[in-house]
Length: 481
Image (cartoon, rainbow, N blue to C red; front, side, top):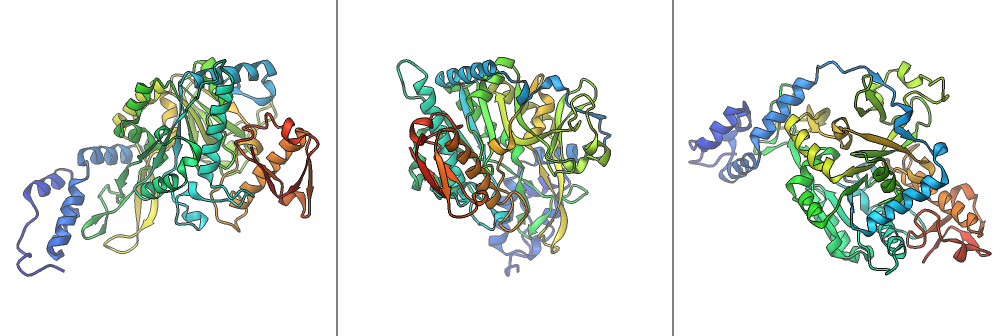
């Protein structure tokens, strides 16, 4: 409610003119009802908006909504490195090339970790989540230890055995930033040096009506939402992380989403493949499990056009079920699992181009507002929005049972739960132990349990013979370094 004597005070002229210039004067509609403190909060909130940028994003994104899309074609087979086509010599060559680049300090890792674990029934950041492995490790710890293991493998590959460090850039959001920092600090960065971890925040954008008007969550607060995982591009630039990478001599950036319990962080083979092919960007892909699987897939935008990702909701049945007569596979077969590699040169280029074009996806959501819960629009970019800007791109097939264990849904759901991810990890690691000459006993059905191999012991099943041969492991248990 307004205070006595405050009713006659008008909004600051500069702020009033600014919002009018961009057609957003409704943000001040309830000014007379606010008390002095609330007015101060509103002015501060409006002044924090980069209105010219917000206006450009709104106009460009709404204009794009009704534009026709080019005919979508399957990705050319030549653009995909399939598992069956890879020779042992190629795998060894790429692994060695990747380790060499890591030893030379040319690789950085970017983690997309802005999301909260709301869908998992947790108020914490997703990376803090413990999926119930015997070790009780969080997703953050599993990923940190995989970086430690790659560093050790890289160090062992050079004659002088020097210490190798991979810099880890972790994108948070305004809602998770402080909690994630404290999580890492309280756990001593899981064995990494604090200097090799950089936290940076993704941005937020106002939510809008279908007419492009900014929605007010309260009479003195703009409704805002994170700008999607594709906000990583503008966030890397605004936080000076791209400058920091250049200063460190980094040439390649491995980028992935936090909610994958099997992610091979800083994968030397994937890095070596990208270097060997000389591409601007690359993505790991898995084959669709079935035609109607709810995953985004890679497509080519018109004959000879750029490669991009479309969501499952953009595919009709004829596309989803179409078969490639030569391979016997689905024509639109290659699923996006958010495992990407970029050259630093391309990241610098695409960051500028995405900002210039300012085209965001429009996501309709129910949201609180001064008019109650309404259907509004969140403006989001996705990590794959960069791909059409690449002059060269390659896809690298991996097995989902080896590299993709998503943690997206709460326990009790049919797929992508902590339980399904845990079982995928335990089954893969149990296969490693048996391949290393170990034996596994169990008092519950083996399909519900297994042996967990610490990332500090093995990155991808390597070097386990000495610790496994002839030993018996009673599942569930953890094999530690």
